Image (tube, rainbow, N blue to C red):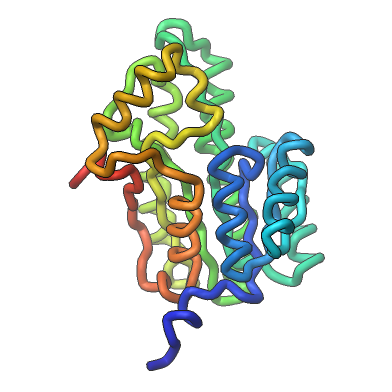
Length: 257
């Protein structure tokens, strides 16, 4: 046995960047990666929410720092990647998690608001991946994990721009995985179901929405940030090194295919 299971799933000595780290899913992803041994760079737009994430991680014995970055801004992304590489000497893992989630009739979406959603939810993933890749290539290894959404499979109404961006992530993942696999870098997508985060507040009737979620799932509980975080650990580890270009549903059995 080349590695024991404990060794295969350890992230000790690795450096992970998580975008959208101030949100509910970002909290859980950062905490799980740090618990597995990674040093986590929590990136996002709001200092207070990033500080909460760092406090959670360090309170649980992990290592994390906060970095302000607008992932729709190429200059800020390049500066983030350089600062992380300069400070920690490497970039092993990139979790593209940042997203905005506006709910409105599709006829109310302006060209400007469409571009704003795409800039964060899709273009930002491309920009971050492109900026992190040279460091991963130089190391001969790396992991890029993109966060998509169950909404892509159901074509949910009132979310046209959001659903479109999440569908784009699936194609982006597959094409990029094909491009950079020979450089030792894997690229995968995690597609969460409906998780209880602040994003769900856009639904007007929360009790009705929660019941709809539970009725749709085979597993009759709500998902937790740890559910996604633990999957991110697996895909980031040596144990997940032979998996690339894949989309993994984590939704309690809502979508099965």
